[in-house]
Amino acid sequence: MPCGLSRLTNLGSLPLFIAGDKIGACSIIELVDLKLYGKMKIEFSKNFKNYSCGGRKILKNKVLNELCLEFNGSEIYDKDMLDDLCPNTSLKKLSIFNYRSPQFPTWLIELQLPNLVEVRLENCRDCEHIPPLGNLQKLQMYNCLELKCMPRLPRIQELSISYCSGSLLSCVERLTSLSVLKVDGFNGMTSLPSGCIRNLTSLTELQISNCGQLQSLPGDEMQNLKMLRSLTIQMCDNLTSFPSEVGRLSSLCFLRISECTNIILQPEELAQILNPVHEFDIEICGNKVNLRGQLQYLHTLQNLSLHGSHVTNNYTFGCEIRKLSICCCDELESLMTVEPASSTVLEQLYIDGISNLMALPDWLQHLNSLRFLLIEDCPRLERVPRGLKNLHMLEYLRIVGCPQLESRCERETGEDWPIISHVPHTCLYLIDISDFGYGWKGFVLLCFLGEVLAVDDQYMSITQSTPPATPLVLL
View 1: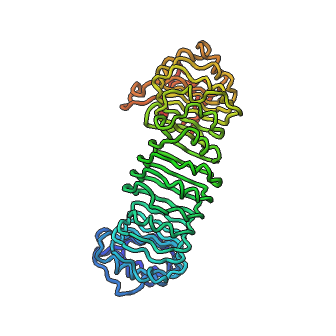
View 2: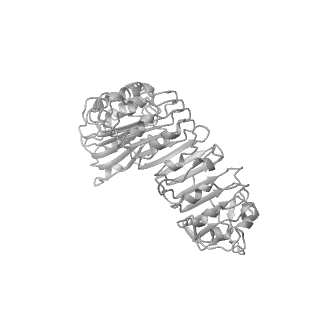
View 3: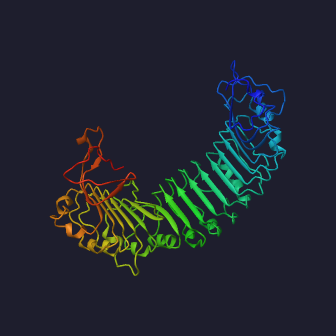
C-alpha cells in the first residue's frame, strides 16, 4: 500500500489496510489521525519486521464496529503491535489471526471494550488464556492448541471450537447460557468429557464433526437438552452407537448424521428417532443397520437413496428435507414387507450401483406420492415393474447404465413402454463421452422420452436421431 494515506483527511472508511515496512510502503503510523468508522481489517505483510509506534494508540479515535487483525506469525512484535492497536470502546466484533504471543494485551484482559460481543481467534497457536470478556455472546476458536481453559463467560450464546485442545471442552459445562455449540476436529477424543453438555439446558443447536476417534455420545446427558432443535453429527468414522434418548427430545426439528457409516442402530430405533423430527438427513450402512421390514414405518420420509457400495453419491432433484441414504444395500424387496397402513410421502427414490438387482421391488407400487425415480448402474436390471403405471404423481424417470432396459423401454415399440408412457420426463439412453472426443469417462445424454428435462438450469429437447452438437454432461 503506497504511502501518503494520512493526507486523505476526509477519508471515512478503510476496509483493508496492509502494513509493510519496505521503502515507499505506507507506515501504520499514517492511520493515527484518520477518523475512520465501520469495518476495518489490518493485515501485516509477510516481510513486515520493523515495528515502532512509540506507544501511540492508533485506533483509539476510530469508531469501528468490526475489526480484523491478521498478523504474519513472526511472533517477535505481535504483543507490542496488538497493545498499540487498542480499539475504541464502540467495537462489537473482533477477529485475530496468526497471533503468536502467549498473552493478550491489557485492553482485552481488563474489560476495556464493554460493547464487544463477538470474538474470533484463528491460528493463535501460542495463546494460553482467553480473557474474561464478560459481555461476550459469540466466541469462535480455530487451531489455538495451547488454550487449555476458558473463563465463565456468563452471557455467551454461541461457541465454536475447532482443532483445539480437548481440555477446552471440560470448561463448556460452566457455560450454561449457551444456545449453540459447535465442536470440530478433536481427532484424539473418544468421548465427550463427562458432564460436558449435561447442564446446557438452553442449548438449541449442537454440531459435532471431524472427530475421527469419537466412539459414543452421552445419551444420559443429551436427554437433558430439552430445548435442542438442531443436531448434526458428521465425519465421525469410529462412532458406533447413537443414543436412543434423542428420539425423546420433543423440541428436535432437524437431525443430520452423515459420514458416520459405522453407527449401529436397532431398526425400531431409527423409526422412533426419525418420525417425530420435521427435517432430517441421515446416512447409514446396510451392513450395520438391518432395515428389513422397516421402510413402511418411516411415515415422514421424503427422499430415499439406496446404494450398492460403501461410497454414497447423494443425487437429488430439487430440495428435500426428510432424507435417508443407505449404502451397502444389495437387497431391496425386504425393506418393506407389508403395504403401508397410510399413504406414504416419499417423493424421491434413488437406486444406485446394485450390481445383482434384476427386478425393482414390488413395494414400489405403494409409493403413491413418488415424483422422481432415478436408477443408475444396475446392469442386470431386466424389467420395469407393472405397478409403475399406477404411480400417477411420477414426473421424472431416469435410468442410467441399465443396458437390458434399453430395448424394453423403447418409445412406442418397447415391451415396457406402456408402463412408463405416462411419465412426462424420462431419460434412458446414454453413451460414453469419449465418443465425442473427451479424454475422460463419463456419460452424455442423447435421448429424452418426453418433452423437457431440466439439466444444469437449462431446458433442452433432444431426439434420439439428432444427437446434440455439444454433448450435455450429466454431473
